[in-house]
Length: 307
Image (cartoon, rainbow, N blue to C red):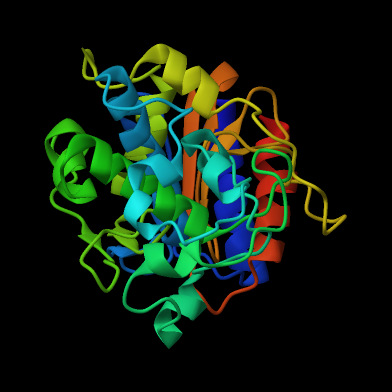
């Protein structure tokens, strides 16, 4: 099939140009079709790819009637709201957090910040006392803090730790086991990063979404959630004219510049891209020290744009 040739062309290109890629795999909704590892396969940090797993918890909680996208952060955590708060703080909804449009206006609680201890010991206290810069829901500003806050809202709504909530509903169903997952200083899983997975385990989320929320015939996600989470919910201003992949955002999924395609996207190249029209999921993992811009260009020119 054409995808197999393109897959092999990409593998050859990586080898020829000595690009830093750890592995690549392609699958349909039920099985891995192609897989190649340039280094031994291992569970690695998938960084912000984790955000799409957190969003999946939102979709499940919505289906169970535990929360709504219009629920407000301040209503869930009134004890954290400062005296005389900015009225915009009180307006932040779960939808705003999922679309990276909270209104805080900066990238907060990114990995490097967390390593430095920024926000210790309580991320909710830290975020609730930061200045607001925009009206919630009006401007995209990529920030792991938005994902962390969304994850905390899920926990409050379901009355469980985020990992404990997802395990019987997702991780166990997808045979991913109990995930190694970074926690904040208070013991809450980081909704925006820090999950460790092997390549073909990581990509199972893409297979679930490709299958419209079903896994081995069992519905795990509502089909409406699949459409909305992976559809364009907000525009993403172009900051790098060479980054063709910045073309819109759903609910913790990025849109991709191919027909109906979207992706879960983690730092340094932990990517799962879903191609619904082709019935295909392609995932890559890359090391922290490589040049992912070159890998991204190769994926586009050698593989994705040719499907």
